[in-house]
Structures are given as C-alpha cells and as structure tokens.
Amino acid sequence: MPTELLSGVYDITVMEGTDRRLRAYLFDDPAPTLVDTGLESTTDRLFAELDDLGVEPERVVVTHGDGDHVGGLASVVDRFDPEVFVPEQTELGSVDGVEDGGVTRYGHGDEIGPFEAVHVPGHEPDNHALVDADREIVVAGDAVSGSDQRGLPEGYLILPPAVFSDDLNEAEESLERLLEYEFDAVLVFHGSSVLEGAKEKLDRFVNFPGRP
Image (cartoon, rainbow, N blue to C red):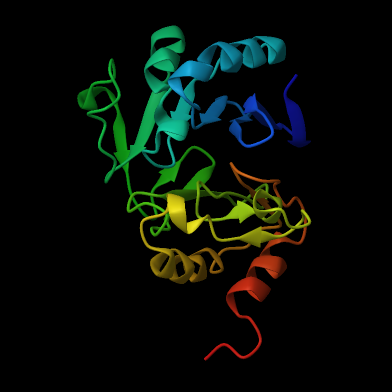
C-alpha cells in the first residue's frame, strides 16, 4: 500500500530489496499528478499501488531521463492517457511507445500545476526538481539522495553516488539554486526522504564549515 508521507502526497514504492529501492510519487490534488514512473518492468507494481489508492493520474511529470524514472512512461500513457511533461533536454528515443509530439517540454522556471520546475543538472544534464510552494515540498529528482542510501543514518541529504552521476561538481553547485526556494520537506527517489527541516539540513550540507 502506498505511504502517505504528507497530506495528499504518496510514496509509491515499485521495487524494494536489500540493494535497491525504486519509487514514484503521487500528488492527489485537483489534477492527480504522478512524478516519474519507475522501470518498464515495475509498472505492474505501480498500477497495483495506484489501484489501491483508487486514483488515476491525469498528469505525469518526468524529472529526468534515467530508466528508473522514465522506463514505465509508455505503459502509464497507454493505460491512463495523462498529460505528460518532460524536461526539454531529455531524449525520449529509448522510450518505445512515447512520441515526442505527444508530450509537453518544460524548463527551468516553468510552472506545471502546483509545481515550479528547477533545473539542477549534475547527476544528469536534464535533471529537474519540482517545488510545490504551497505544500513547502521539493521533489528532488536525483539532485540529492537520502543519507541512508550510503549506509548512513537517515534524516539527511547527500549527493547521489558518483558512479551513477555525470558531474558531481556540477551537481553540488546546482544545489545552491534549490536553496533560493522555501521548503520544509525534500522527497528523494533513493534513500529516505526528509519530511521536516530539510532546507536547513541542505543549507548546512552546501555551506559546510570552512567552505572557501
């Protein structure tokens, strides 16, 4: 069963194991919005979780083009026929069944329903976060991970692993852009989300003691 992390905001875990956990998020506002879609191979679990909620997404927002975020998009489109938003830098050639003309492209500063898109490249060039100002929530894409992804105590935010990232220097620099916004919670796709005090924790991570 999906976990309601905050009012109307659900963590939909589509794969869980000792070495990897994959998830999507559902915002059950007037236009139910699914953020990312998991792998193509995890769509059965995604659909089962949505059925448990009794919600059909009317909008899908993709944060970036990694397979564990966009792989299930074609199946989601086939089943629900939602409005689809994809970053302007994301290549969709590897997503069979999704035509570029059938999606809306977005970039930094664009508004999508309750969200403002924030371009935070580094993990991947197309990575975006989504800021819901009314709920004081950031959906981070893979701009950051939960600290427990790396075996640390949960409750903090760290950069994604270098082995999965394009440019960690750029990823760290991009976090300063997120700090321009007001938020209390950061939802991550790997590791555990931080549901309160997240901006203060991220600020301490970015502006660490002794930073030049």
